[in-house]
Image (cartoon, rainbow, N blue to C red):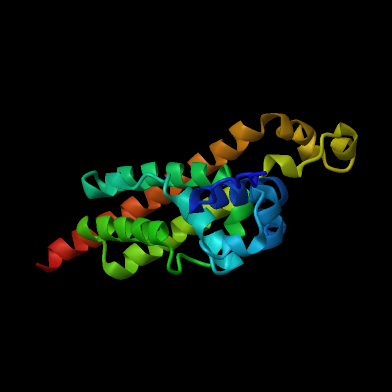
Length: 215
């Protein structure tokens, strides 16, 4: 009797399965034993593609970052490129918030993350930002995006009007925030991003104006 065929194992299948586990149960759900069970293979089979759990998590993170839009940094004004990138970056992370703590370690050796950093830094420097300031802007954006994607402000308020009625007179509508989670959270991010870019634009103009005066 022929042996049953085992489903072909690939990096793509492992990444997709790990991503689903992380989305549903968090980072701690990922282990070689659990992944092997989900994939219908033996644990050692995974080592033909990934040597460690961290390598799997890196691959998941990079597969998500691959969807972030950075092309605008090649030919668009830096404020437009920064805004486009910021919204795309947040959308990618907000769809997979459980992976954000792993991404917070930095790009490490992840190719997609390094390409993103290179595109952003290169675009800002090309537009006239000093290298140190370009680095600061990249860090600022990561703080804003990661914080926004990691948790929902609106979901932090319980849907119980009685909780707020007497003791918190300025929060009498707070119980409704969860109903409008998406608009609240996206609106807050957009406001923050716009404020950040407005402030950076003033800094940029001051720098460029001062530079021109020195010439």
